[in-house]
Image 1 (cartoon, rainbow, N blue to C red):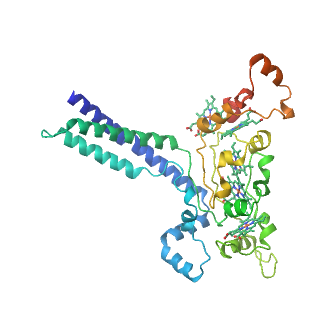
Image 2: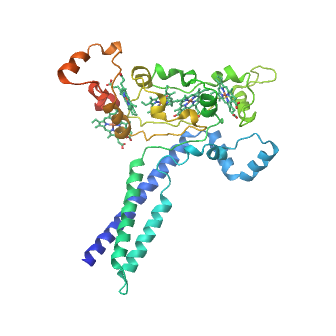
Length: 328
Ligand code: HEC
Ligand code: HEC
Ligand code: HEC
Ligand code: HEC
Ligand code: HEC
């Protein structure tokens, strides 16, 4: 019995070393890979500078207190730190060490409580299995991804404190697949007047002028403009079709149901895991379509209700669960 349990534990250990470890490594490297490829050069340089030259940043902060270093993001946004699977390397190693230790101690002849040791070993294996599962699930998904952007643009300041409507900037959300990101000319509707913010002072708003080649003193566009490269946060795989118009306009789904409380975020974070089952299909199976939409007038809702007892037409009933409606 003792031998059987031990050999199971050892096989479990070998499997666990080989399975979750590479899964973990891949998960992290894809995360890193996409972070690097999606990050614009300037953003990357800025974030590296923020990390490696904290001293310089400190000095700068002294000279002008109204600057926000990108390293300060997390302090400003404590509510949105730690969304997603997080980094499981250290807990995994600790569990592995515990497992090895108790296995070793349990096998010694003078061990006083072999049953307790076995129990601890089993718990450690279960815990490592749980980490393996979490990491494997997160592969290719980016919940918690919150890249540093080239300008310290805060949704909390704009959509929250100043109450600007989401669709003022994301104009295409109602009419097209992509909600789109506004051009800097949209920013100038206000920032031709507003030169200073309460968190970052003039520094970040000055970047808008810089990108546009605008001179706030002469109020003329007299320098060459350069394109800004925002870093994309949400990104479904290429084999998935998703349309904002279908959801925002036809489906009457609020932005926050999918993106979380963006109006409270200084830095946009991928709030939900954009998974096929738990995210897309889960909603499609529960959510009723808007029956006042004239497009759906061929559905005889009253009759369905009386004859079949169906009180709402969920999205999956109109094709929202067919593979081909979401996959090319
Ligand atoms: C003043 C203009 C403005 C307003 C208002 C605004 N946004 Fe944005 N939004 C932006 C800009 C610029 C970006 C790109 C930079 C970034 O990601 O922070 C962005 C990015 C985003 C992203 C991430 C896009 C990606 O790359 O995946 C989401 C999601 C988003 N906005 C949702 C919202 C929601 C929801 C609201 C309303 C609560 C809103 N926005 C209001 C300007 C705005
Ligand atoms: C049903 C869920 C859902 C709703 C509702 C929704 N979004 Fe999105 N949004 C997504 C997904 C999924 C993506 C990633 C799309 C992709 O990669 O093709 C995305 C991407 C974005 C982007 C990145 C740029 C783009 O268009 O791909 C912005 C900006 C954005 N959403 C803003 C908004 C705003 C503003 C609203 C509300 C008016 C909104 N979204 C409503 C799910 C949603
Ligand atoms: C509808 C008006 C409006 C639009 C459009 C707008 N802003 Fe602002 N923005 C403001 C106001 C008002 C403030 C000052 C808030 C405060 O008091 O800190 C501000 C502040 C800022 C700040 C400084 C934030 C701080 O508190 O330090 C930055 C950076 C900024 N905006 C960038 C942008 C960018 C980039 C865009 C375009 C994508 C944009 N804004 C579009 C009204 C606007
Ligand atoms: C919060 C709820 C919700 C979530 C999450 C959601 N959807 Fe939807 N979806 C809807 C609603 C509501 C409709 C129906 C709109 C209408 O009346 O046409 C819809 C319709 C669709 C349709 C059209 C279906 C058809 O055959 O007419 C597609 C495609 C679609 N969604 C894809 C997606 C994908 C891909 C995701 C995940 C990335 C997703 N949806 C997540 C609510 C949601
Ligand atoms: C409501 C939209 C929707 C429908 C319907 C749907 N899918 Fe998906 N599917 C997605 C999204 C979004 C992803 C990518 C996100 C993820 O990793 O789950 C995906 C990913 C996948 C993947 C890749 C999984 C991975 O881990 O990379 C496969 C395979 C797949 N779907 C098959 C199917 C099949 C088969 C059906 C029909 C039975 C189907 N899908 C129906 C939205 C949908």
